[in-house]
Image (cartoon, rainbow, N blue to C red; front, side):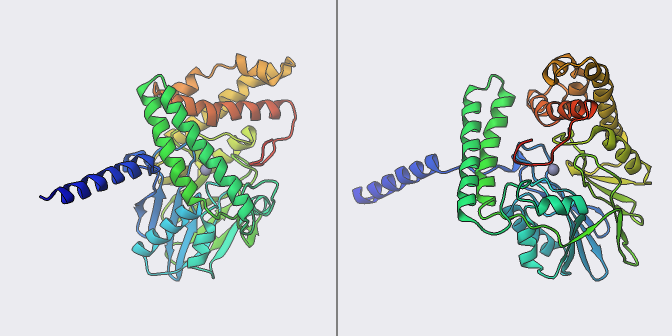
Length: 373
Ligand SMILES: [Zn+2]
């Protein structure tokens, strides 16, 4: 080999090393960020985000009817929406004729813009409270129409999350937490790309208690059983296949409790439980074939409410009450001894559900917003 040839190889190697070191790393398959199509019955698939993510992407359910496809939720970002369009096209040549959004939290409707680019004639449906939130700029953190200033602000925030995750990985005291933070940094790198130009689209149609999408083989019932995780959670029921799509009324491996309604959630859960389902598709996590996990969510809600009632009636402040609530059984149930899951069970479930239970017990309003409250 000539000296010139070697020099060219060395320079190329140094260059590629430099760009690899400065490039933002994307999620790895084992991070579980990207949704995976899973068939749950003939003509019914779920695009599952298989593990808990700090920035979650809700499960998306695809249901085939004779004249088209019905989608339940739309993915948590435009990027997720584009991947969902690809996955749908690989499974069926039929068009998406309707998209049902289970609730307003951004990890469920943010892919809708991309679904509608692919199938502009699709109906868009939610409960009336969910439709109202998706129309309300004081609830949502992405604009109704493309807005470069809002986009730049959002991007800066997500890149800040990635930098924070990198810092947390560097100072983590357990190997599990260090690995979790590094995966979270990769997740936010991808989420930043996925959320470029994100807009919130409000469904055009709403329903109060029930709306049917008829079909001979796969009829679909949309229900509102009452408030639960939000004030407008839709439940989708396939009576022939005995499949219930629960939205974030059920989320695994631990529930999400932000701005939720503990007492109503229990009543709503009882109505979901009364459906003769064989498969329950949660808002996050893998499909379930029994009622064990549903019952542990009911237990967890009852446990927090019954511990809170005497504390609230003694006139304690929220922070005083929080210190006296014993969450050890809940941590064991939902996270076992995994430090990463225990951390996020605290952040996504125990922290916010204690707040909601306190507000409920003291008669304070529970606010639905991504902008604090
Ligand atoms: Zn969710």
